[in-house]
Length: 386
Image (cartoon, rainbow, N blue to C red; front, side):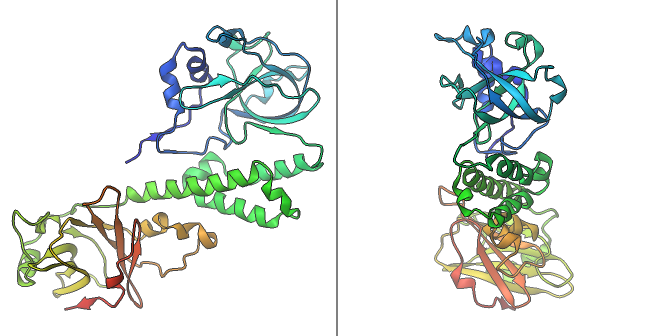
């Protein structure tokens, strides 16, 4: 399971990593797996600034000591500001902005400068007062898709369009609740644009693609937490009796055995239900066993041979809504029939990568979805109920 790498909100940690006084902190800026929240969404520490670049590049004494060259900021006259620390702007509205580049502990100050007289949009973090340059409020701009957005001469309405785009982005709280809402809203914004060429301007397309990819990763991460590969109740002797009558093998040469059975509510019937793999001499079967009020056995899959490196599990119906790509296609509406109850999971343990197939009951019969890798084509026909 990938480790969540939370966003670094503290500017002190950022500066410590950059100046060498705390190199280990730079590792927390690296992403190993996925972001819990996309870093370009406006956090509680971020300030969005619209301003004009002024002449002057004051030296960043705090950061320059760790470099063979001077680190300099640029003066910016703030025209608009929103979110955090707006009340810290000086009377003359002039602040210092320092832009950074790099990733994974190799942060460095940008050497290029923004053209004097141009209007720029920054998403930045205000430093502690003790680290201000020339006693002016100093904002650090971390690398990112929305760090700096330049004005253009060939696109006169860029600022209005960009503001509209920013207003459509989800907040971190909305993203944590359900990232699909914001990702779908950005898709709709693209379709509403009167000037279709705008879609291809940076950073609109990049952020749209990034939101979709990161949301799908986030949904899958949440889904994996719903997987259950162990029973929540003692395996009843009645289940063992049923498996014995079905000819299921048990022994040291059989992976897992009957003790790997998992309980759940898989069928549109009340009563005690279990899913389990039933190994036999020349094949194995994935079964759902209903113990009460009467015993019924449903075979949802069968594979010839004695490759038993498979494991049965269970997950709630929500699992497929989170795990499959259909969560974003069609504005969140499924193209498949939805599961009504728990789904049966079948995982192959003999491969290098995850291979999981989900089986679930619908009004028209049993469906299967390739969560990872594949579909179980042999199981597309109606399940055999005994």
